[in-house]
Image (tube, one colour):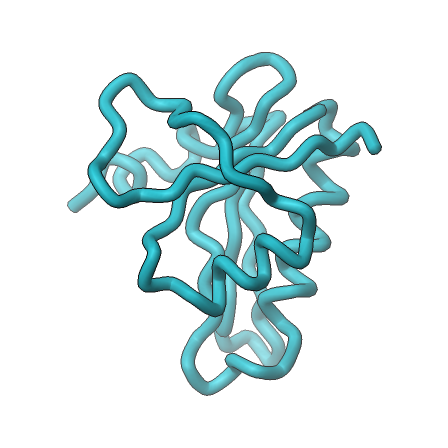
Amino acid sequence: MSSELVQLRSFYTTPGFLLLARPEDVPVGCVGVRALTGSTGELRRLFVTPRSRGTGLGRRLLAEATEQAAHNGFDRLVLNTLPTMTAARALYGADGYVPIEPYVAEPVSGVQYLGRDLTR
């Protein structure tokens, strides 16, 4: 099990956060932001269940995460994704994410790194 899941509460500690979409108390989507540096947050685990895809939920979760990140003092959000995740990459591109240099010490081959300025 990943250390992220084991340490969920501390991994997304303030100013980071975790959002969960639960209409009728059934989880159907989530997204998290964790603090990397004082003003940069990392967007993580944007997920929508297959049944809820195509409803705009992913876009709403991304918008809410972006708004809350700015409210919590982040000036920039970064993320990483795989080339095969075409729908996610299209969503991020439409939201203003652009390719950036890897922000981790040991980048994983093939992973794409994206970032977005929140001050504009």
